[in-house]
Every structure is written in structure tokens, then in C-alpha cells.
Image (tube, rainbow over all chains, first blue to last red; front, side, top):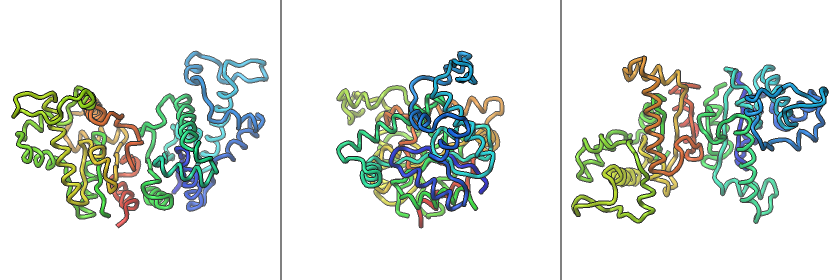
Length: 202
Length: 202
């Protein structure tokens, strides 16, 4: 298995856990928050700026690009047509391309499927799950208050969906974006990992 | 494996072939055109009427139902608020529910995922594939003229997508409708079958 595996996931679906287990199974690097840290360090932006801006998108990056606004504008020149969030996304994308270049790995979130679309060794997975399954996980594993859990999940999904469509220009839930979609609540997390491995091989 | 497997599929993706192989692997019935025949016979409609109306949807069934138009109206009463196509869909749905009641099987197309949404023993698969893969299959396996193949594929997908959204009220390509989505061009048809079996178990 010499692929770069990207994972998109609904909140509470266990997509991150599936990614972590895949990385362990294949003994390859796993990138999630580490990715932000690395991106922050390499680009010189402060780490907390990355965390604040992460997955919070309001306007269209593609639109900015289409309008010919300088992608490479940065604070050294004292101005920029791109928002801070957009420049962070571009810095993150650079990191994603770099780690993919280094070899097989698992990358969760951050539109990595889109960022790496030119590579042929990438396998794009999306993990979804039933609302019941996600409610249980949000409450038990992440300590979300029971009353607010449903709302919290929907808001998180909306944020991720907006982030994806803002940067990619496609719907997050369009199955055509992925090589494989798994419903983790149908068969459980470990079975999902086995299934993906059956697909990817040794 | 005691499940009813439903398969939605893009034209030329090999979804039907995957379904056939799954049915052979588990030694369970496979329903595709046989389903139409059976539905036609049981309902008394002529078989050719079914074939003509198949997957050709123009207006909203859900709308008709919401407006309180008589679902069970039929030609015996000399009038009906539902079109012939709608009544055929309802007759087909009855057949799908009946074969699912009889036990594990594979059902390709016809919104079977939606028709069987109340059952808990159903596993919904969608098969997609790259355009290159589908072009090759359309030309080599179905004898579609090379020049017209791309257009033919897109038209077929559009027809299937319209059919689904007409009857189900959801986008055909929304990954939330399925337990699993497979890209057959990424890993090949036999590997896809192995993977689904790894997921479903013995």
C-alpha cells in the first residue's frame, strides 16, 4: 500500500479514528492537528492564528482567484487581496503537498482530496454515520452536553461543508468527490478499517 | 450475510456486474430486469408498458402525494390523479418490498434503497467510476458508438438522477443516501466485490 489516504468525515462519525487506525495498520504517518502545527511553523504564521481560522470560511476563494487577486500577496508587502484565512489555506495546501511528496500517509480533513487532485497515488475516503451513532459519540467521547449535541453536530457539519465548498467549489456530500464512502454506524469502526484495507491491499 | 443489498450505479460503472457477482458469491437472488417482468405480471400491466416507462420521470410524485391525489386511482375507475409512470413505480415498489420480505437478495436500481427505507436489514451501495473507465465499458461492452459515448453516458446519468430525485426527493449523488460508495475504476470490479464482502461478512 503506497498510497496517500485522505479522509473527509462528518462530525462524530469516527473518521479520524478510522484514519488513525489505518495509519497504524500500514505504519505510515498520520496528519491531523500536527499538520496545522507544521504548516504554521513552516509559513511563519502563529499557530493560534491557524487554529482560529481553521475550517471557518465565509467567502469564495475561487472567486478571489478568478478575479485575478494576487494569490501570493503577503504581509511583507503591507497589503493583500486575499484574506488571512485564504492565505492560511494556501500555506496548509503547501504542507499537504509536501507530506504527500514524502510518501504514503493519512491526512484527515482540510480538503486534502482537492489539494492533491493532480496526484495519481491518492485514495479519497469519506466517513459518514447515522445521527444516533454520532450523538452517542459526541456525548460519550467528546463530552458534549446531551441537550446541545444534535445542534452541535449539525453546526460542525455545516462548517465543514461550507469550508469544503468554499475552497473546492463542490458540495462536500457529493459522492463523486471520493473513491470510497463508508457509513461507520452500519458496520462499526474496526470493520470499516478492515474493509478499507481489503480494498487497498497490503 | 442475511441482508438485502440495493445497488445504485452510474452508467458504465459496472454496478450491475458487481451486483451479479455479489449475488453469486452469497448464492442469493438477483433482481434487475427480472424485477420489471415480475412486477408487470403481478400487477397486470403489460410488460412493454413497464419497459417504456422505466426510469423516465418528468414531474414530482411526492408533490402528487402531498396534494392528496389518490395514489390508488387506477384505470378500472376510469380516471386517476397519478400518471401511468407513477402507478408503475408504485407497483414496482410493491414487488421490491415482496422480494425483500422473502429474504436476502440483490436489487439493482429503481430507488430500492428508498423503497426499503423502513427495513433494518438493508445495505445500500452506490457504484461510481471515472469517465474514462465508463467510456471504455460503454464502447467495448455495450457497443455504444465511440463518438456518441460521452453524451450517451451523461444522458443516462441524468435520466437516472432525475428518476431518483423525482421519486425520492433527494439528490442521487448525495452520499448520505448510501451505506457504502465504491469507485470501481479506482480498484477494479473484482476488488470492489471483495471489499463489499469484507464489509458484509459471511
